[in-house]
View 1 (cartoon, one colour):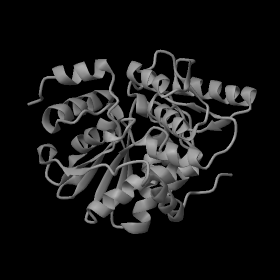
View 2 (tube, one colour):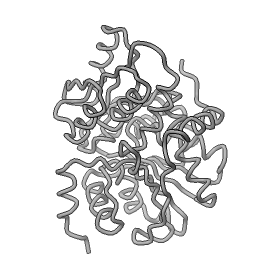
View 3 (cartoon, rainbow, N blue to C red):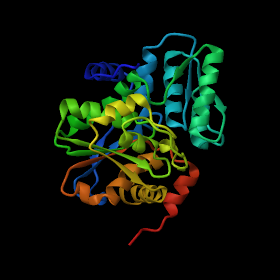
Length: 315
């Protein structure tokens, strides 16, 4: 059984990452609503928050190399960290991946294997590859060191603004929301953490509601939210600490992407726009509060960027 990450682990991760990454900005965005702030995790070298976890995890590993599975951002995180630490890295992605993310993985020096139609197909193939090659399989979420690394983003949030009252975090595997819960419980217990997922792939949401990891159809087009099962470690961290788990549609996420681009001048991939989609849909939940929307990534595909740029403003 995996051990839960602790705040001591988070503080160690922050010390390590201080030499690797620059803290990302937390900026007010009144165009999106009063009290709204955006945490710009889209400004990392890999374009997404996952790089924090990859660097922290691989810094503590020895061995012949790693195998990861991902729709893109976790893949880039591992490839970036493997290059930094001189470690061979193989990434399994579903077939026909986001071309920008696939190109980035290759450019970072990792071997890219495309397999299966879904995230879960890629995960099963990665498990086989790791066993056959004698390599360390890196989970997309069930890794204490990965969560500890990701948690450093939330230390930055509360250091920049201790008065934050709510944080909205997109969920695929759940490492970001789990990390937010861990840090908020320790340093800002009055701040509520809200998770958000696509209703087309509700496995993490339904796992939280059920109190145990479950499998669900995985049909969202939003890559960073496209998982078909809950992850045990992140669900355990979410279980008693999450204020609520919200669902939004893929269409609402696409509108939020367009709104971020048009009104906030922020390029977000679908997962990075999901917090705004939740804020817009459940606006009454956040009225009068200081709310952080985690823009977790900016690795939008060319098709996403075109759609966001051409979307008509809603009345």
